[in-house]
Amino acid sequence: MSDPYQWLDAVAQAELVRRGEVAPHELVAAAIARAERVNPELNAIITPLYEKARAAAIDPQLPAGAFHGVPMLLKDIFGYSAGDAYHMGMRALRDAGFVAPHDTHLVAKLRQAGFLFLGRTNVPELGTIPSTESLAYGPAHNPWDAARSPGGSSGGSAAAVAAGVVAVAHANDGGGSIRIPASACGVVGMKPSRGRISFGPDLGDGVGGLAVEGCVSRTVRDTAAYLDVVEGMMAGDPYGAPPPRRPYREEVGASAGTLRIGVMTKAPSGVAAVDPQCAAAADGAAALLADLGHRVEASHPAALDDQETFQHFSVMFATSTARILDAVGQLIGRQLGADDVEPFNWALAEMGSAVSARQYLGTADWLFAYTRRVADWWASGFDLLLTPTLPEPPWALGSFHGVDPLTAGLRAQALCAFTGPFNMTGQPAISLPLAWSATGLPIGVQLVAAYGREDLLLRVAAQLEQARPWADRRPPIVA
Picture 1 (cartoon, one colour):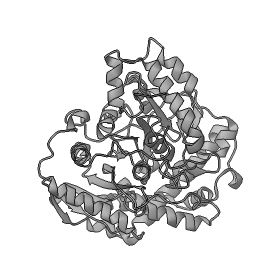
Picture 2 (cartoon, rainbow, N blue to C red; picture 1 turned 30 degrees about the horizontal axis):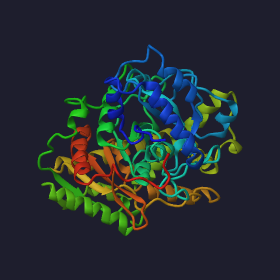
Picture 3 (cartoon, one colour; picture 1 turned 180 degrees about the vertical axis):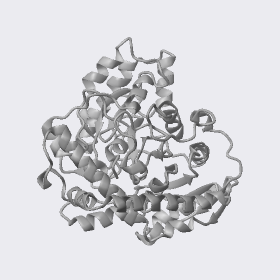
């Protein structure tokens, strides 16, 4: 049977609903059918919410927001939804049958926009590695090659979007967790500026300010329109990004003018060898941007080469992991032990527990100084930085289990080489599916803007999308 909605983006689906050409329950039924066909192969959705979605689709109180009646998926880290399972890839939460007591502010805004939640997506435990293969739920599979990782930690979301289950899915990013799976699965993934989207009501921020909420999608305009409905400070937030000058949706198709763009294809701090295909993807994007009239040159912030960068990055993740394990123990009513947690995360928490308050504050001060040093490059006259998103094409599943924690940590660090620094600075960055490897695997290219300049990223991303379209590319595994 044909499915006329499968490859429509979320904006187009919402427009059909507004015109009365399709009803929300029809969009939901079609999306559920797609999920049921492909999820046994991808393992992207771990908590189906199909009956809830069907009921919400015919509820006369369904909000008539910008995405009225459009189905989407929620990632199973942050973004929890009232009464639904919430496990963060952890066996302890799964076995305890934990459910979220209320919506986060983000999820409440998504509901108000009219989205319908089909389920929650697969993640690595606690989102600490960039590959979605937890022991609690098993690996998610890349629709371009089922033996390969869809990236992480938003791997289930990216795999589902790439395979045509939904047009947009919730994601978040603490070291590359939106951009890495976007690159691995051939979709669009933007990490907004720090403070752009609230982590309330239970959290002030995520991973000491490194993490941000967002989405993965197949089109730049979906990413822009999604950001419009979720951005903005909420009461009690510790900080917020500068408000947009106009709706982000209006940036798509707007002139970007002539920009000065730096290109970096060597991994920051030298923590990874860069596959020639990934470097070539960035160089190809640079040539395209030059053809579009921008000034492109080899340049990058000197601070990105600082050898201490990932040491401080690790301190933030380690202390955050220790705190999360304490919080999970409080939720389930007992202290967690080594048998409750994957070896890498247990080792990370042990490392975090050994960090003194003085050391933690020292890292915080270092990060503030690092952010200013990186920002100086943008202040010197550059508008964007262009890099590969990943140092290599999608990799084989299984490289993070059965190895010692140090090996796993170094592997994670290498895969986050181009993405992690901008979690530390809080800048917005976007991965676009502009290239494919010799074997047909997607290779993403990253653009980074100054803090608060998502508008500029969206304008340039839309230019690239028009100049080198990716919408007609389909992975071998589709719904």
